[in-house]
Image 1: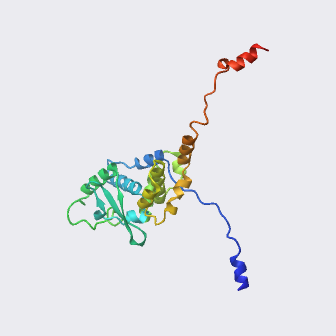
Image 2: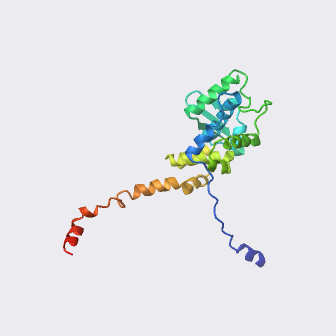
Image 3: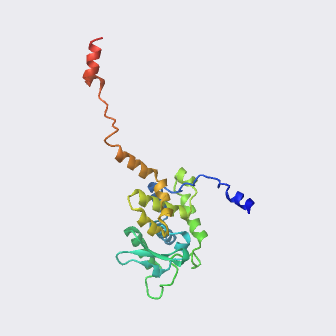
Amino acid sequence: MASCQDILAVPAKKKARPGVNHLAVGQTRRLLAQPDRSTRRGRRDATLLATLYDTAARVQELADLTVRDIRLQPPPLAVLTGKGRKTRHVPLGGNTAALLNAYLAEHGLDRPGHDDHSLFVNQHGSKLSRGGIAWIIRKYQARTGDPALARAELSPHVLRHSRAMHLYEAGVPLPYIRDILGHVELATTDIYARASTEAKRKALEAAYTDIVTDDLPEWNQDPGLLNWLANL
């Protein structure tokens, strides 16, 4: 018992918290614009990437989506089933809803009898796997022509982080972001507040706007300096 107490008294090793790997807004926009929407496959991929980003879904949540999980009547939303079979309703943006509406119509999924059909399928008609979705993202990552984006460790979860970070930097309150992400505790969502350098910069600029200025007078407009020079 004494040895056990000694062992338990050993402090845990401290380690640096990993940062939140995410894309900038411009990088995300560039990635989502890569699929060729003139082809059937490209339209599917464009809709998939937009839905993944807009809903901030986990990759398995996206893979498990069925037609019945998408509601395009105003207000449009997606029903995601996450950990512990818990469901949450995530609003869809207008552009994503338009892509989904066209996608469902093109594949005949808007007709009766398809409610339980997987939303995104592969070339064999089977539900896309987690690996398949990750492969699609890497394929378009390589096509962006952005060296920084090409070197990034990009995965479906990075798009989830990116969406959360962009929402926070746009001023969306953390409790709303928590509900969108499906977190149980607000402390889990708080990582985006700690990681957002953009939000910190804006807060600092707002705090010091009237204190620190760069309005320095020209030397020849400074009466005290001119008087001192004249008396040399």
